[in-house]
Image (cartoon, rainbow, N blue to C red; front, side, top):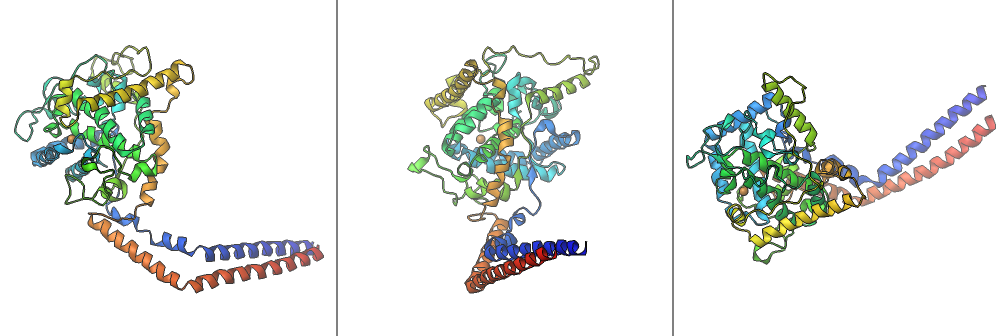
Length: 480
Ligand SMILES: [Cu+2]
């Protein structure tokens, strides 16, 4: 009994010795990783935290009120007009690969101003447009009376009735009705297929600027249909936050997507937009690299997957039944559903050429048609897959799933940020700290003999421990 417990005690001692030995070796052989972890300065670049951008329909009642009042305050203070004029000065960048860089900068400026007057918000809200592909756009949550006001022809009504642009003209809408159900909007599955198949920044920029970006501008019409005055309609901002989300989503699919600004459609025969260059529209504030590393440098993120169509419809049904005094809650009386299309993914209808010229003066009609063709090819391909029985339409990954699957990748850009080439003070400070830390660890490495002998000592200890352990085992065996 006594012998057995002594043996057990010795066995435990043996385990401890082996553990300690292996730990001392691994610590001695990986000094640089430990030093790097200790000096990571990433939190200091966003001293007030990272903002969270959420869909408009998911905001609480208090947040929705804060948003509407905040937008009105921005108008009253002249900030909205300033943003609109800034946007107008960047007309030349529309229809070019600079489009996405310029609008991310503009939207960040807008978000900063909005949160000053609406501090209850977590970030600039966006219009989850994929929800609208399942029904008429006029019934979108965004166009509720108490949100951005109804999508009808004429001056704005509802919460923003009487809103004027920076030339003091009433802001108007003029929805384009090509068909009762907007069949030329790519669905979540088609968008997912496009995002996965596009491999360069230039291609991504061209396709997404036309579809869905320009399509929604044209569909809302009025001020939104004219790029030189579109920011006067609050719809512009929820739309552009969503367009930025699509870029962020595409970025998160690979490291190349994340930081490579290569394009075949650049001016001056360039092949890539240099990350170190100042960004167009906001050269005094940011570099292109600041715009690309949006989470660590512009300090916002999209944490929510896109809302699914059924969830948004339910939300709207609840709202409409609550606002109607006669309708009983849960009575099933809601928005009439559009007829089911014969194929799951309808192709988009070509936009009339005069509309194209108005919304996109810098882009040739051929380039526009090329994008429409590309989107339709993807839709037809998916239809073929479904019709041949290979897949069920509902099983094809949609944008929400793509987003969820890529969320883990999003941290890639954060960890890889070296804070170089920045126009932001706090990021420049972080870069200097990082460099100092690296120089510090380099000088530590200059005493490499120490580290080496440390590793050597670790190995000697390990060998010595093994001898002792074997001896302990022998004694234990004798005792048993
Ligand atoms: Cu624009």
